[in-house]
Amino acid sequence: MAVRMESRTIRTRLETPATVRPFAEAASMPWYLVAVLFASTSVVVGVIWDISWHQSIGRDSFWTPAHMAIYLGGLAAGIACGWLVLKTTFAGSEEERGRSVRLWGFRAPLGAWVAIWGSFAMLTSAPFDDWWHNAYGLDVEILSPPHVLLALGIVSIQIGALLLALSWQNRSGESGRKMSLGYLYAAGMLIAMVAVMISEYTWANDQHSAQFYRVSAGAFPILLFGVARAGRTRWPATGAAIAYSALVLAMMWILPLFPAQPMLAPIQRPITNMVPPQFPLLLIAPALAVDLLVRVGAARERRNDWLVAALGALAFVAVFWLVQWYSAEFLLSPAARNYVFQGDTWPYTAPPGDWQHEFWLQDVNPAGEFDTGLFARRFALALPIAFVSARVGLWWGNWMSRVKR
View (cartoon, rainbow, N blue to C red):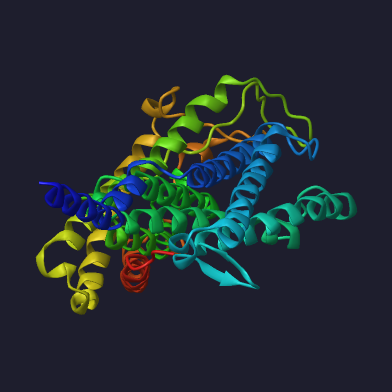
């Protein structure tokens, strides 16, 4: 009896590292991952808020709440990942050191290194941007050197958060299917950031132009297909699209609750509240199509990725065109001019006119009329663009599915 009990105890000890430990790691999200996800959210919220601030008030000071939210995100990511580097290097277990990446003698997960670089880039850009504005004026150009550095830092923090969440999901084994909310959320924040970066081309007034669909075909399939391929849940791309939509809707409904008054000329229209962002793109619809395609039978085999990319490009362009074409008509109609959809809301620098209720047609003939043939030829270019984007996304997703460090 004693021998049996001792044998059972020894067997339990031997089984603990292989079974109990991975489950324990999956059951609770590490605090540093929570901190980096918070940083990712703070950065995106700050950027959307900052755009609204410029549209509602103007750049009255460097110390605006929107700027503080952006740099708080950079600081939080840098501190959390910096602590993780020191802990893993000097006090990490063999398991923690084994799943880290070595750089200059220090060790940390890959996502931590990416986020640290982003944090340094963001915090370096802050005084550089303030000096640039004092020397050359307020927002003389969007792609100024400090703005480019800031954008690179922001995207790096987004990708770092995604990689940290991804490695945590992938190390969780089969339980990772239930524990991948962090990954989906991080992917949603990355989608939100990309949507902000191309927002110049995605106004509702632009959504009857071929250029809008070409830009979207290049920006979003790479994200949706990558997220779908590396995700462990049933609908990973859809979950990420929902996270993006929820964030934008929250900002769209919260910002107008705060009063605002323009402080920088020229003031073309009266503004009494913060200007909200545009209604989110309906990426949930093409994300559903992507998830269905990537998860069906032979599409899971990597040898079929070229075919999956071709079918996926067609599905993305068709579904996205269908939903955005008609939603744009609704958003420009009187029915959307309410608190829920925030239609017909413009910056104080935009003079009132009929243009704000019309489509800004680009595919026109010499008489200035919409040219269906010209639109069709230009729109057709969205298919090869989406194909390249989807194929790169599948390659990226295959790589992400193997990330455990």
